[in-house]
Amino acid sequence: MWCHQPIFCLEKRLINLVYSKRMFSFRKLAHMYRTFWLPNNPVPPYDHVCQIGDPVLRTKAELVNPEEIMSDKIQLIIKKLRKTMKGYDAVGMAAPQIGIPLRIFAVEFSELKKEEFSKEIIQLREISSFPLKVFINPVMKVLNYTKVSFPEACESVKGFSALVPRFLEVRVTGLNERGEEVEWHCRGWPARICQHEMEHLNGGMFIDSMEKGSFEFPLWQKVNTRSGRLYLTFAPHK
Ligand SMILES: [Zn+2]
Image (cartoon, rainbow, N blue to C red):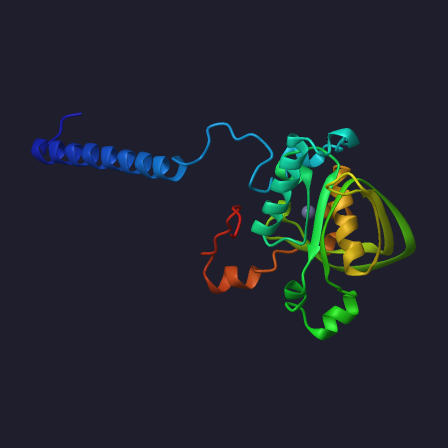
């Protein structure tokens, strides 16, 4: 087709060309800037938490050879697990969440964390603090089959929560990070955390046990007040 305004057309084409090249360059530069420090092929144990959909979260984790607990490999996994749990300000984390399908989990509930809850909630949910504990090859026995439902969330299902019925009282036995036999009889909130982590080791997640209708994005109101401008990060907070 013949153009009746050849000069205008040429100008427009030039502008488009320059603009598209600039956009391409800008995007490329921004991408390079964002990914410059990232390894090309990250190898677990990761410093980040795997998200739902990652097959490692649906794999039944394997037993750790007790003779290898003090090895550099297992000690590194434990170190990364503790670091990642702290980095995400989580109260529990299982090895599959950092990409390692082994039966290891860590839990901790500090006094500072407890202060985030009201007295009523602490009493209702039977929340109590406990120091860091690492369980290797844990075995859980239910001591009280009464189930109680309270909100639960998971760093591997970032941003969401749901009511999850859990047994009131359990006993967890296993080995600690030094390969020593340990046993923990816990009730209420600590028992809930243990059940959540045990579920991870069996390839499960809280969304499998939740009351389905209660699944929610707790910040849904913010999505409305900010006209949808709410951003989630999957990186550690600290
Ligand atoms: Zn979880």
